[in-house]
Length: 439
Ligand SMILES: Cc1cc2nc3c(=O)[nH]c(=O)nc-3n(C[C@H](O)[C@H](O)[C@H](O)COP(=O)(O)O)c2cc1C
Ligand code: SF4
Image 1: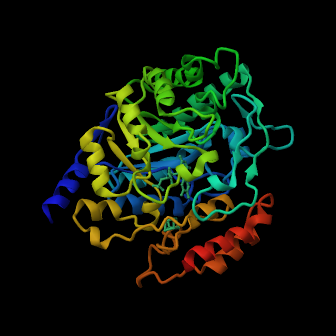
Image 2: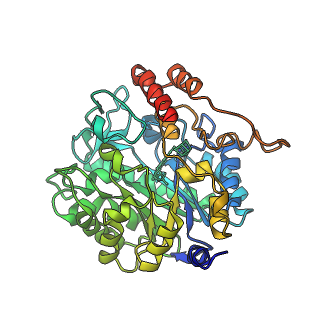
């Protein structure tokens, strides 16, 4: 191992703490709705195999994506099916999954969504709800690499959520956290990013309420301060309770990192175990799922949050370059490193970095075919790792995996099985994918 690699490996191998929990290294599996639970929202054998593969690959902590806390959240979820936390009957299945991950000696957190806000799918008599009636507008030039939607896309306008509904959502979120703890999860994370319900309160761009939930930073923080206080009353002070939150709108009329950090300092006082930094949102996706490492550091968000909250552990996203990660930790701008797409492409990435085997890494190419599949509700796959999404079926395979995903076939599959609303643009997305593969 070269001295330089040793230093990187040493930094990234060092243990750290979230509330009362010690984590053995800095790598965290970023939450992703790729878990293929059963249609009715229980973890499947595939869910478990996906997670245990990443635990064996060296991640110090797994955070599972897209856990729904309410029945309404499940109905409006833009990605289906998701894992459910809205009734006690889900606890035994969740426990089976948690136990399997614990056998690998790795802790696991549940990311909890009470509502998808302006990103939800409305139904009959079930409008989507957000802080204010501001729809999500995805302009074509702001889509991530590999996406092409002529003229962009505007979601239905949400209704302003009422105070009674806010209190109901709070009660349901606390109940979901109670279930996660009962199932053995080592911690939970509230999702307050990407224009989902909670995040719509944080920025004046999406929150123009005149009641106690809008206006000042204190008021915009209120839905989360109240919820976290109620969660703490349920789970105590030592149980890890994290927050994934937006850090920058990246829009001309939006809020920058200092504004989000100001709101975060108010929420944090209620006992937030960590903040997972989430750059941009669905309206500025080009800054959210980036194709290069360290954009969030270039944008100054970890720095702004660290300046506002010297003690709170910060989790970095979209920073896969090990040297950059080690430097950020050494400089004090990050404590944990979340990896999403890189962990699809190579589940053994953490072990390879920590053991000085970087030359063996299968690098994610950031062409986002995984994300395109997510958006069309097709089970997520990774063309750099044919075993991804098939871990359970392949568990007994003696031969090396030789399944190959061909893009035209993938495009056809997307067109055949995707969401009816988006079907009309499926062929264009598939074409974009084919072009990317040839370049
Ligand atoms: C297929 C897919 C599914 C995702 N699902 C979730 C999710 O359920 N919750 C969440 O907070 N982020 C989700 N994300 C976002 C990732 O956690 C991460 O923030 C993003 O991919 C950027 O990180 P990366 O550069 O390491 O991929 C998802 C990303 C991908 C690619
Ligand atoms: S499909 Fe492409 S972008 Fe997605 S994880 Fe695999 S290599 Fe990365």
